Length: 79
Image (cartoon, rainbow, N blue to C red; front, side, top):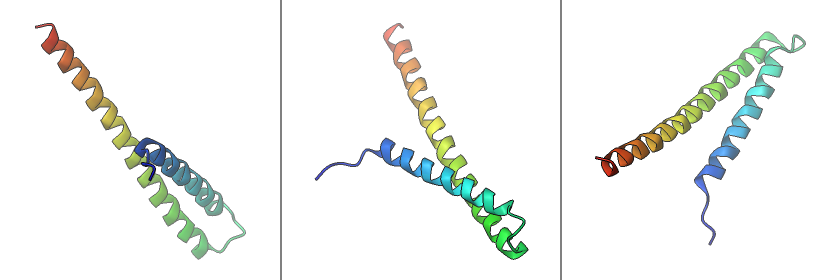
């Protein structure tokens, strides 16, 4: 059984969330849709953007952790 690469999976989910946000925004701005329908799409847009922001923050946090570990390791080796 093949192992799933978490980075690749995360990239797929980020792409899906970005696509969902784009579709939802398009529908929010569609003046031909009923207001109630547009409000529903606005909720979906908000949720997609919030989830996308959280994923990106988590990714950024992991990068900071890696950099911090590298700095700490360098400091230990050169003390």
